[in-house]
Image 1: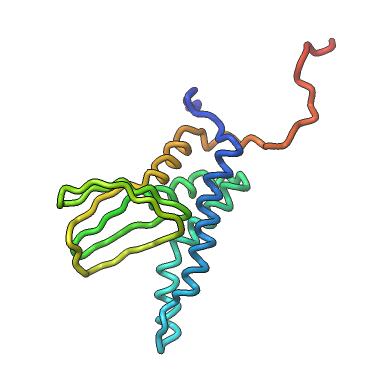
Image 2 (image 1 turned 90 degrees about the horizontal axis):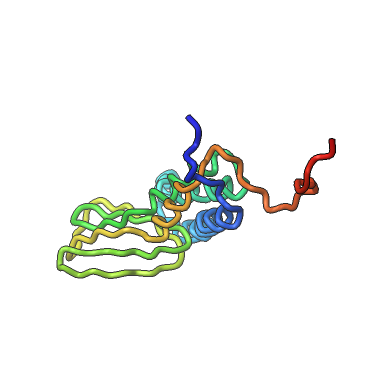
Length: 175
């Protein structure tokens, strides 16, 4: 099936910006993860907790790197990495949010409050148990825009190179 005419090649600057938001934010998150590694008497437990918490950040970093390089795997992995950053959810017994570099979180809660939170950095939180005052449901608008940009492009088309070609394409061919 031929690609839709609405789908275009992802422009190099857009691809690099999306990749940088994944990769640089994830690199920052890795540094935070190393600094915050839990102190445990059991090194195996310590590394297991760190690996589970840092796994999504590593995934985002690899996705960003592959997208930056124009690898065929870059587009689908970046799409998944941004998809995982889309929801923000806090309720009794479960909390989840994840973002690399930036989050513009549009949210509402069960108390009737609506808001927009802006944050820089990297956060991955999955928490089972615990209580919260109100349930919060939110959407990361940065991730939503990134997903929109990726879905408006054809992943099968190779990325356009930002380099200048030496080929002459103007004028009629001599014959």
